[in-house]
Structure formats: structure tokens, C-alpha cells
Length: 264
Image (tube, rainbow, N blue to C red; front, top):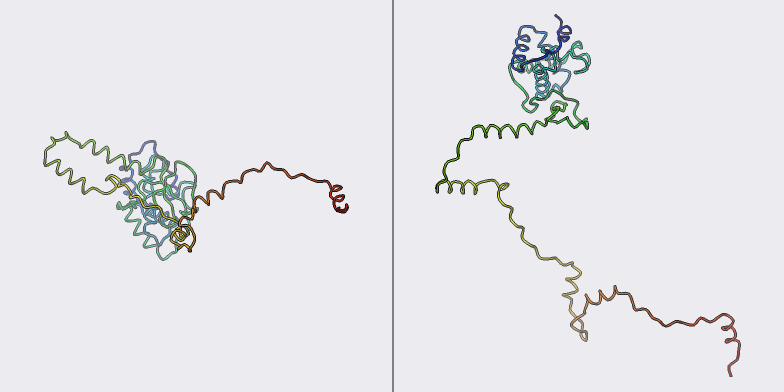
């Protein structure tokens, strides 16, 4: 069966991840074409100079092999329509780094993974961002941004240790003086993030250089000691009182008559 024919194998209705991985690895060990499909995915989808990027693409391929949503063979995953680079199973590979890619593919089949990729089954070219709420990025490697669909992976990593600790917990021992002292010592050595926040000291109010210069300037002789600067500045902002006196307006004729008439 050719790699293209192997890629046509559909995903089973149910799949146990560990058993599916073992079958795919055993098939790749027995059939070099299966390993070649893994090499081709890593070769065409990642920056070949980045070992982390090559491992990341290989990790995604194996994660899909273990998933019930994808075919159960490596060539079936890599050759699925519109999933990997165009012509990934047919284009020639002539780069001199091909032995390096083949060696990392062999490590993938032996169980090596990119720990930062984790359970991610998707990636795209780095530098692109999409606004879908179910896309949660985990790492960037080899020119690709790897992401998980669905629940945030860091949320699971926080909740799992809590469940394990709750299952392993036993009845609480009686409190003694030695245990109280050890608890006080452990609290004293705890990180500052768990200690109560210290109140910040209050700093004195700073005055502007102009106010300081005016206060310290020597007064000339004959001047009062109090310049009353704050009061003067406050009075300068007060509007002057209104004057009720009005000026009588004379008409132009009256002004001309008064000017032309001689004084007696």
C-alpha cells in the first residue's frame, strides 16, 4: 500500500490513545513509508534549523494519531486533505539537513516529544493571530505557533495537582508546640508573595522651586515681614466689585453746541 493509499484510512469510531500510538509506531518500524510520512511533515512544515520546531511538528502528528478524530496511521494523518503543506507526500526533499530530520523522526517514534507543545494538535505560521475564543497558544517554535482548541491547558495543569493532593490527604494530626513552632518558621521563610503587604511610608509634600525661592528670598529694608503672598494671589482671582455709578451719554449735537458756544 502506497503512502497515499495509507493516507485514505479513516479514523476509527473509538480509539485508545496508548494502543493507537503503539500500533502506529510498530507500523512505522515495519514499513519505512510510514516513517517517511513523518519525515515529510517535519521537513515541509518547520524551519529545518530548529530542533524544537521539528519536534513540535512531530509531536502534533503523533497527538493526532492518538486522537479519535484523525486517522490511525501516520500517513493517514499527514495525507489528510487540507491539513498539512500542499504536496507534502510527493514533493522532492533535496536539502542537506534531511539526515537531521530523519534522526529526529526516529526519536519521535521512540517516544521523544516537545514538552512545550504538550497535547496540542494544531499549529499555523507564527506571526498570524486569529480571534477565535477556543484557540489557546502554548508555544512558538520553528516558525510555527502551536495551540490547543477548547479548554485552556494551563487551567487543567492547575486543577490536576489539587485533585491529586485531595486524594492523598489524610486526617490532620493534633497541633503541638513543636508543630506550631515549625509552622511559624515555615511561614517566616515563605515567599514575600504570601506575606502581608507592608504599608508604604508617607513622604512629605514637595514644594515647587518657585515657592521655595520666594520663601527664602531676603526682604528689602522698609518692607513688611509678611508679603501676604497666598492672600494676594487669592484676591487676584476675585472679581472686582460692581460699580452702580453710570456715566451720562451726551449726544453729538450737544457736544458740538457746547464746543461752538463761546464762554462768557
